[in-house]
Amino acid sequence: MNLRPLFSLPLLGLLSGSLCAQSLSPTVIASAGGTGTAGGVTLSWTVGETAVQTLDNGTNILTQGFHQADPVKLKLNMRAFLQGPYNAGNGTMNDGLRAGGLVPLQEPYTALGWSFVGGGDETIDAAVLTVTGNDAIVDWVVVELRDKNDNTVVTASRAALLQRDGDIVDLDGTSALQVDAPADDHYIAVFHRNHLGVLTFNTVALSSTAAVVDLTDGSTATFGTDAQAVAGAAYLLWSGDVSGDGVLKYTGSGNDRDPILSAIGGVVPTNTLVGYRSEDVNMNGTVQYTGAGNDRDPILQNIGGVVPTNTRVEQMP
Image (cartoon, rainbow, N blue to C red):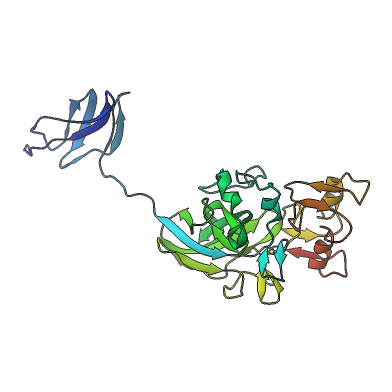
């Protein structure tokens, strides 16, 4: 038996610099579907709907079938403090890297070997780094979403910006962070290139309405033991992971102290080096091995301050 619906299929394309539409003439089709031509593009269909495919004849482009909505943009109002630049006197972080013109316009993590899921290669306009005050940018961080049934599985990750007051924001430097992922419950982790990362202990329901995740005041439980440093009422990511291996070490193979000395030349410990570098533990824009405000002492302090062979391990599953 033949089915006899009458219909027309629109074809939208840019013809001679303008938007045009063409259609097939009303046609009787069989239950198996059929084909037709419009604007030099051959269209296929099944009964009642076009076949799902994208067609391109070099001039016109047509997507047939069901049009999907834009991917859900999950929104996060997330906060975190980095111990390195944290100033206990005013409860914010110093923005020495930004003030020194050292923060790169492209996220640094891809070059460091970070494996992103869906993100990576994010860039910003130079104007973003001209903002001063509590909303000034301190540095780039990485935010991960992890599977609600397995907190070892990263489902989405991207680079974001960290403000002096702890807000983690999108690439315009002010907006809530957005991540392309399905609305669902997720574990959330945040990482920095020379600090130990932190993972939420519980999942967080994420949707297009911004969820609040505050890692600065102890209100959000974190995975593991002593996952964050505490300074007064502030919770901070542990500083000193110069090698980026997730372990703070002061002595022994792969320690985080020797790279600081190597960066300044390896011979004269009083030398310094200006730059955007992982050896700059306090993130003031200068790598320094000795003297007040050096980058070596925080590593020893964060492993206990007494036994140099102690270590501190990033609290990740």
